[in-house]
Amino acid sequence: MNRKSMLGDPPPIRITPQDLGRLDVLLAHLSQPAGVIDFLQREVDRADVAESPDGGGTPFVRLGSRVTFVDDRGTRHTATLITPDEAARRQDGISILTPVGAALLGLSEGQSIAYGTLDGRTKSVQVLRIDHPAA
Image (tube, rainbow, N blue to C red):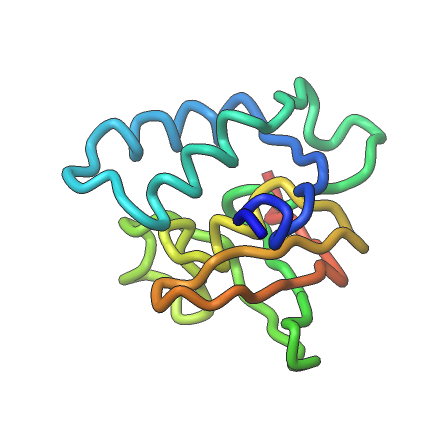
């Protein structure tokens, strides 16, 4: 069984133009494009750009979103999706450069995705709730 069939087809995801710009800059300045970096790049590349993140459509996870999700063990987590430069200011943050952070990007409530961990395991998450920061 190949990796794609093992993980299944990923759900459709969206990204804001602002997050796309921020992540393009971040990915361009990373010195070691491997593992989670490759996964994040693939997620950014396959995402549909949503012109209006708050324009009446279904909410989705973006940078700065506070996300409640459940992992494949049934454990519930709540964290804010952040970039590495925000880590020092956020105790509740989950970096976009972690496997689970990259996996959450662009998902809507109710969607789930499988992803590979740094130690080669396959895990999954399902988004339960998304709260966005005040603009």
